[in-house]
Image (cartoon, rainbow, N blue to C red; front, side, top):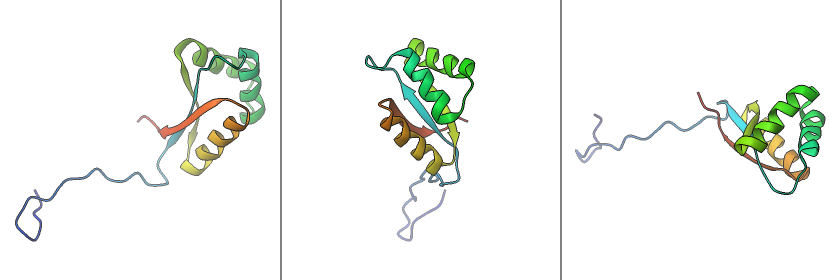
Length: 97
């Protein structure tokens, strides 16, 4: 264990997440948007196939949330903002390892 200059044990802190770490965009279920609209947004914004967009949409609908993209923080922040512009509830969180 490391010690501070005063002889006290130094506090151990978790390493800060770097901007190069993986982050994910999560879409949350809401009572406003139709399932067809959510699927359409996934196709339009991410370029996902209709089948994959529908899978994600049903995950949002059935489980309350779905990870729709993973990557660098700045890109995921842009995805969150874009999804907000479409009227979807989305958030950014560290990717699960």
